[in-house]
Image (cartoon, rainbow, N blue to C red; front, top):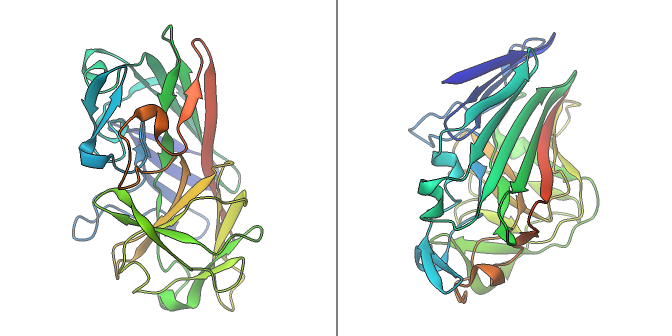
Length: 290
């Protein structure tokens, strides 16, 4: 099932499967902003990553003396969410723990994803509630893919402009995990990452520590841009299939396992901790800057 929301400028479509944003259409310009899941390149559009980001060493983790298995990026993207509430320009979808989730993730939770259209774009909010009696451990992230190029020309004319200066250090990703002992540079300056058709030949770009609250996807010589709000995420993934006509900007609250991970969930990089009865909120957004 899919849910359609709209305001004076935008329409958006959200699938109950994975609470995945499937379309964000700008009626002012006649542009579809989101990648349309062409399986020839990649069949996703904007998966929700929960309760882990990236992969686990050997596909498994330990908690409370027991081993559990999870797929890369967790189970939310393969789960059916139910409708919570909504209106003309917003919708909220819900996922709650149950027998199937407890087999792979031993925590009680309620996970809400809210999509709300704004005058200039879309805001996506996550709310994770710990409905159990003990501490809950989790990671969460976003994986939206934006159509490229969105203003003509080839991708080499586009770049990412970060809000503030960033450390020029990237990590590498192999078989779902962070490659140990390997890092590199990616910024042309402390704020600019140029896009190219070969930049993802070595896999996703992982920025483990970022300060910016937003970044712009821009084309040289043009005033048009897409502004991606990062929602306070401490880490960022940037990815595309080499040569594909999209780019993913992925705010992450958590990181993939390093290759030498201990396998203990409590020791996973960037793991979030939530006391019984408490809730965590975060999210991301996109603004059409034209």
